[in-house]
Length: 346
Image (cartoon, rainbow, N blue to C red; front, side, top):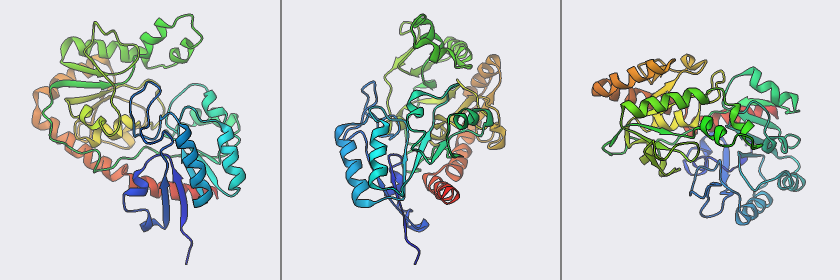
């Protein structure tokens, strides 16, 4: 009998508790690297896995599980308060383990947070199929790169009964305005490199004039100009997505066949997902069937107005969008993808 593949994951937890791991010949253990009540850098509670601030408790649990479970693979993502020394120790105690870094961010350069792990990571997992973007990682010495999009649980993201109070919801930061506020600061250059930041600023500004808009974001928004509500994260993010008729998205850093977490979860919540077009999106979905995309600010405004006036059409697209997301991007499907990648690089 073939031995079960053992996996430790910081995210998604659903790989351990979803009831399907054994079906694919593996055993999964999840670690909350942020401890019992994981938080983001800004202090909000978040059970997303990715983005949690590592705590001494979480790191201790990780070391203990590595020693007792002896995994074949470890999957982690962006976490603060972690460093390469932690994974050097993991490799010393378990020399055969393969380490996978799930990098779901988009940057022009290779971030310091990523560079520290390059010599230790066996494979970097990204959420786009952009060879120009991949090249910067290869140039820094990354051994293997594969695609692993974010997944979603049908039980965690669903059409929860909630009467939408707002026309539109946007979740994210305004990096264009943030860069302006930081002008002269060494951190400003990081935000100035988002090529889609000005488009986002202009589009959301116009949406705010014409429609009842709520923004969930920490940085760059003028509190006197926009209706801002606090950021909420999983599992409370479903309520955020369901509080408006339309979930809006723009693309700060366009990449070929980029699929962002906001898309997967927004569509899974069964609200109309209306997004700026990103190269390659047509390869996955049909416009006005699964979601709606726009290529100019004026077009985006016109489409919002049209779908607010046509409830049946809007809800139909939201329904088929969720159906397609659960087919393409379930956590179960992501586990299958991960197992295939593991076999490819082993």
